[in-house]
Amino acid sequence: MAENERELAESTTVVVIGAGPAGMTVANLLRRSGVDCVVLERRSREYVAQRQRAGIVETQAVRMFDSWGLADRVLGGVPYDGILEFRVDGERHFVSDGDGSDGPAAQLCPQQVLVQKLTAHYLADGGDLRFEAADVSLHDLTGERPTVRYRAPDGTLHALTCAFVAGCDGDHGISRATVPAGALTAHAFDHGIGWLTVLADAPPPAHPLLAVSPQGFAAHFPRGPRSSRYYLQCPPDDHPDAWSDTRVWDALRTRLGDPALPSGPITDREIFRLRSLVHDPMRYGRLFLVGDAAHIVSPMGGKGMNLALYDADVLAHAVRDFVHDHDDTGLRAYSRRCLRRVWNDQEFSHWLTRTVHDAGDDTDAGPFLRHLARARLDRLFTSQAAAGAFAELMTGLDPEANSVGS
Image (cartoon, rainbow, N blue to C red):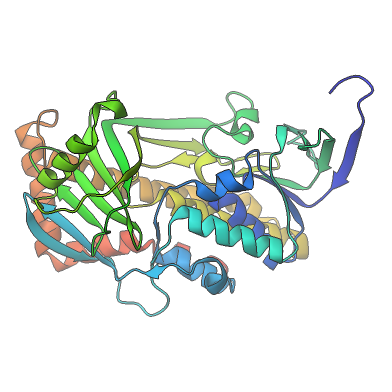
């Protein structure tokens, strides 16, 4: 801050950093709880609304929104029938995600659609959301009244004092970066696998599809009525420019075992490494880390966004109990409770990642691990007990998760 530059002082209960699915879920749930909050987002509303990521809101998350009376307002996705297709060397196998319980089921709801609806509802409900907040900084996080400073688009400096800060600004955000070195333990794992991810205006599959072949892993997921997301296993240091449109479609038709797979204009492509990361604890003083700010999970199983929604639910209940009942039990248990779910989903994602990659191209895994992975797939396709355990993990349901908010 320049000398003699004035600062506008404000106060709220919770400052939410980041307006993605984690931040906007926290904000909406706090509003439903009667807890005031301010959301700060460094990007523009247009940018945030177009970020394309995950596409399935799992059963537990749908039921969470339903328990808050928000499902009809913020989801509105296409109901997901719970059928997942595995294609092994062109042979089709169908596995159900459904656990047989009553209640709302998972939905196909791309991240950008969920964020748009969460944002619209929050603003319509009178929420305070500030885009293009620059130079965000966090102060006095271990005190009773932390301060969050930022510069508004018009250049005005603001200082927001609060009771809590929800760090929902992702893996590279300011929230976790503010935590002093050594206060958190980072558990990181590099899977040594790259994916070329392709977004195309092409017909979506009837069911989410995972394909195993000697040429490598591939996947095909719906992203809308006329849009698809594809994944192709590749070296982690590969470059998108090495994948021409022709090469992409040829590889997909080969690995998906579908020579007639229709193509379409490719609107986006990028390569990323499959990695996992967990920070423990997910709290520092009055700062609570939510979603990717606390943990990254391999995309297998679609757990990343759903873990963020679970964190948001746990935090909202904890803050509500503290504000209204002076009960800090939930705040003290926040990290432990979330990390139990995080590690459970990390294990499932790791299992599925190794299985579908080791079962295909055995250049790195070798024939022994390839046969083990094929045996796991065979058990999934033939054992009712194995299919049931898989469905439970895919839906995100477990006894403690179901007790949230009870």
